[in-house]
Image 1 (cartoon, helix red, strand yellow):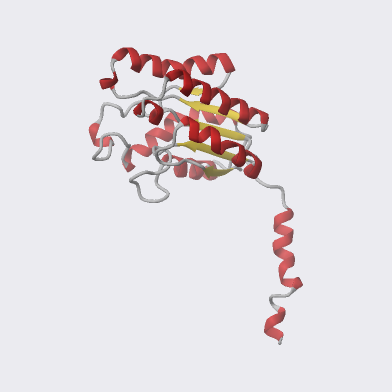
Image 2: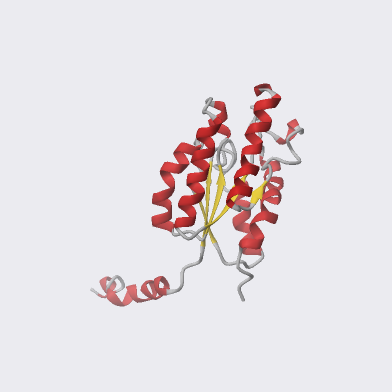
Length: 209
């Protein structure tokens, strides 16, 4: 019977004590396939690299990657309230919109959804980082510029820190993309993180000691 004692109340005490420790602040990444590691080995995407950089710099945050391949701003808007309730993030990084363009969603709808996502996050006491994107040039220069300009307008209107373009620096390098020439390859992921980091870091608490 002594073996059974290992699973009794005394054995639970360390776990309960650990659970009582202050929880790390949470960063939620609300994104689509580019943030969901589409076509990549697990834990090699830019979000996983961000988690590692936080650890390396002893900045005490946990990271929840709530990205879903194929997701639209409507999908993110629908999913966010539950994430806010469950995870209570201190920061929400929003990487959505490209799939709206691919599906022909009106720009006004995409903008309204992003605005609502920002408002929802703030109501949940989270800071927001907005990540801008471009759509392929075959959509026409007018639409392409309007789409990208939407992120800048929202950033200014709502005073939200903006990553101007997640793929900056690799967009004209085919070798940095997977065979579909849409999704960044594994070797491109550090560049994506480096595009996000300067906008994110000022929002973070300092290193833990």
